[in-house]
Length: 493
Image (cartoon, rainbow, N blue to C red):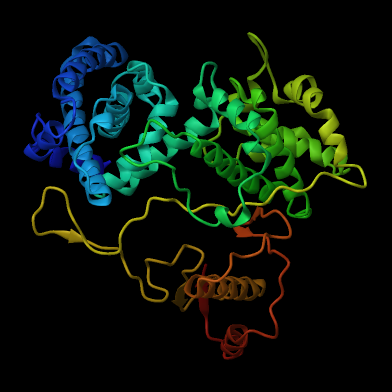
């Protein structure tokens, strides 16, 4: 969290009022947004301070006001950079429509406050038992009565406008994006359902994205001057996240049946496109697990729901409520198995059975796992708060500590017993594995094929993936010679 404190230190020198440059942008608008913006900030500031003190205790109301002040400074700073970028891109200085949009300002301020409050989640979590949970995202959305959909639309522009944000902060905002796409945006009353309805009725949802488009990082279809008018990109973002999650779960459970992954994805995507009402007040992963179980069932693959749930718990950013507390009907919740039997299967039975027929549905295009759209430049960046200190990415030489892991390091101790003979084979497997992995990294070649079996930790060593090395290892020969010479060498792996 040092990076967050560093950001706060950089904001201390910023002003509490719009800069001269920002004020000029306001004056260039057809309708000057200054007065409306100041009144909005005053109202939101009172609301924020009150809700902050309710969450962590009345004695912290002053800290709440301080956090809001820092948030406003970051809000001004990011807004100015966004407008500069748009002026350069469009060669215009009148952003009246954007700067007079209340939703845009509230969303941008909420994003700034989410950043400056990151450190508080640790501090107040220790002082007040429930504070950490209360302040966690999407707390800020509830405070400002802000739709998750509107907050989502400013995140990418916010990050790109503030290149000094640390990777920790960017990672947190990406997590907020995922939470919105997985669950929050699917709550009752969300504009996303109306969007999907219009898209489906217009025929746009009949075709998934072309395969080539999945090869590129996620690009939102908006600019700083058009943040509140176009939201179709969220649909494609949901598909990308959905496939990323599905691919990971398949790697855990279906490494012996890789042909099932595209079939499961086809059913999963069909559900999101044509049966999107099933997502209302539910989680994206609930449909994912149901689709996996359904396809395995019709394909006569022995995979129990209990096994799926066990593997799911090992995935990142999961919790037990996702499979233990699933909406069945209004006000009634039960397990994921009950949801599958009473809701998912009943709605999709006809479609699911088609995959067991000689002429199954056409498979949907398989998207590649997307890379993060938020790139960190290779050129040195100035450290916030310093005029002459710069940082740049580490360039590690071969087998330097920067790229070595505990499995790729080896300690040689002269004068101790050598150990069991099978240690030779384990050392050789480790070295060969490290060399192959490192070669792939240098060559930037294709990603390795999925393991042929699940990997388990056996006596501190991962189970082999079934690959065989060609010929005797030079390392084994050398060690055998050393053993014959009765040199006591002990390799600690």
